[in-house]
Length: 135
Image 1 (cartoon, one colour):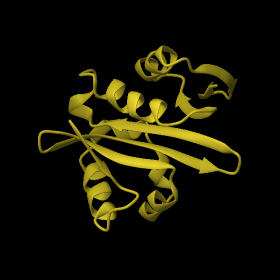
Image 2 (tube, one colour):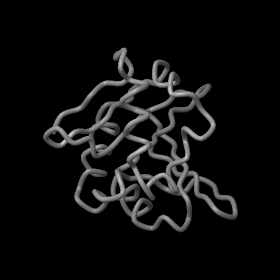
Image 3 (cartoon, helix red, strand yellow):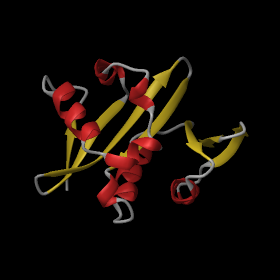
């Protein structure tokens, strides 16, 4: 496994775009870049692509928004359930001491279960989503 730091790379936009174009149905649960330009990674606390051999299988970030740190992850459709989400979560949660927030669709049970394993708890909810926090 290797991590490719998007925050410091000149190729980050192209690599990120390629990952997202190839992520398949995983994007139905990961909508972060629907409303943001790829250049936002330059402002992230941490942002990386996860590679297994030469194949990009996942993405993770910690994004500062005002006084909050938000976590986001995405694993490519054909690689969900193979442990890559845990690898990304380990990297993100071990890299940041303090409160971390995330938003997750209520129907995304596998992601909710993963987040609970990393001590995230529901802080608030809307009709369709939970806001979870890890302190």
